[in-house]
Length: 85
Image 1 (cartoon, rainbow, N blue to C red):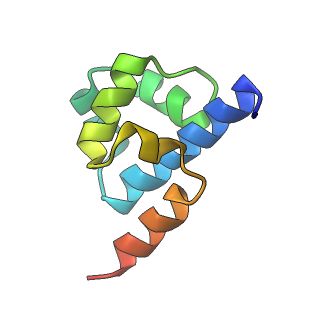
Image 2 (cartoon, rainbow, N blue to C red):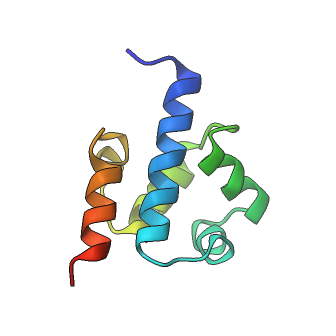
């Protein structure tokens, strides 16, 4: 099992990659998930744990399930899908 700090970092990295793959600016993403831009950035950096209610909104905005955000290969999938048209 991964340490909580590592999980926050991995989850944040996944959020950032998925958001970027969908060309959603950070400020827009923050607004859509109902948090400040600073909070969204802290979630993506893994410096602040993301609350479950916000995680659910983020998954909805990104068009994935919450469980997809915890998949090891989700970051790779996001990068591949953003290049396939």
